[in-house]
Image (cartoon, rainbow, N blue to C red; front, side, top):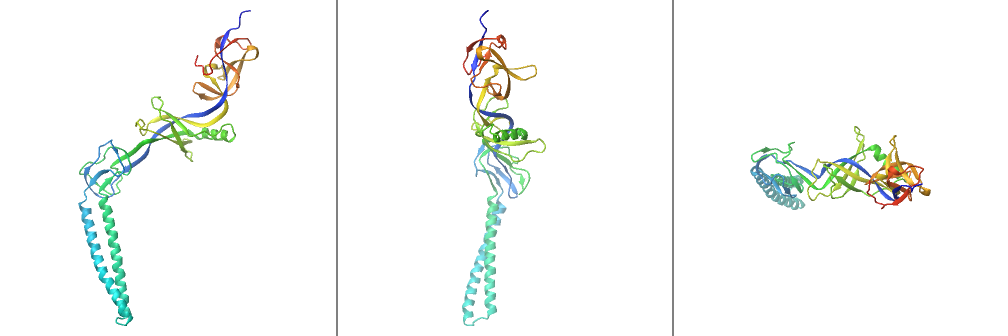
Length: 350
């Protein structure tokens, strides 16, 4: 008899493996502010360049302030008049109070003097409020950036009439670093992960996340899962998860389609089998060839749970210490002997 055929084998090991899910998502600005006017008037000047970076508090538009300046001056004059009258009324009330002690004035005259003073005090308070309101309106003729970020197109130009509370925005500012990614996962899959964690099959993982861009290229900066919505969409039956990613180069833009890889659990002492050592039978079931006792080839029926890089995560059918055949599969016959050639654990051969 000839020498048994040589086959390349990898000795399997058990180790902790992060169970991941790759899901579709859309990028969303970290912050977005729609800029609208808070007073009526004509736009005199735009003070920004479209598409540039602006800081919170930067002047964006100047609205004609002449009418609001006049309103402030009028309110200040009314307040000055009220304060002058208040001084006279206060003095009169104090004098009548002293005269009342010696019956120099009647009780009614004293009460009228006190009432006039309180009316004057209320008029002064109203004047102060009117001045404060006029100053607020005047300040709002300077439309300032509410947040820092990249500013979009301007919807108005010099000479445009704008009104307080209008539905149309003047422009929009978006903060793009960091960036949110809204990820959609079916409620069934999410429930399955949670059930497996509750059963002890999986341990909770960290909140690490990674992205693949629209062209399939990996995004260099890792992110973190921030929260999972509490509601299931009634139409799609999906739950939205939100992750946060750094965006220092500005590569991510709002509305981009991406693929997100999330760590959703850790399987302790899991077995990873190189993909080149796993085949499918005519029923679509995962199978593998293993060298057993006496270097005899054994065929195993496997249960797999997704991939982990170039490996299948095997839940049943293989165990730590098994010698999995990954090379020379065409020469291996179940029940027959073979000569093992040990290969590195991280074999990348086909």
